[in-house]
Length: 190
Image 1 (tube, one colour):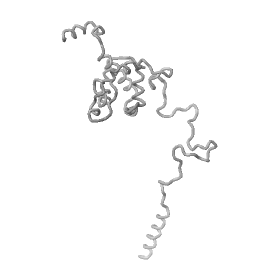
Image 2: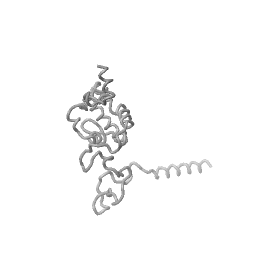
Image 3: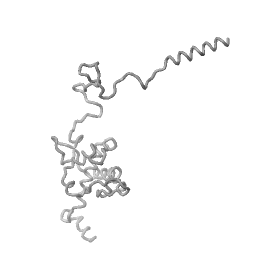
Image 4: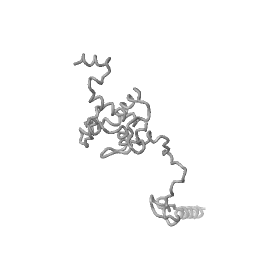
């Protein structure tokens, strides 16, 4: 009986070692690797005409890209409301103020700790750019700034862009541009 057990154990071990599957070394194509299987020599296939990849549906290019007819949009794809600006301020404080500081001068905490300083939103060049530019930079990144599209949803990127424009206006507004009912309060504070 003992000999039969040993024989069964040996057969099991032998069978198990023969069935090793090297999943890390399986036959597959790496990204962009050539192939002789298809006539065009590519291993990856082109997207089937008339289909849309998951996450790529863009019914409103203005909303999705920040552009109108290829140029940066100078308008919001949604109504400008107090709630939108409040959401923009909240999202700006969370995602942007670490580098740009809460007033948009580019003197945030990470800059004080040695990271590269971003330009101030209050320089003339950035005051002149269309609103879609800010959306595009958040979406695709620019210079040292990484894109935040994977962390900040489209609507929030537009809210932040609107808030950045509000920050710019707040730092360069004249008393004549203030509503008459608010102007007297400001004049009293002088």
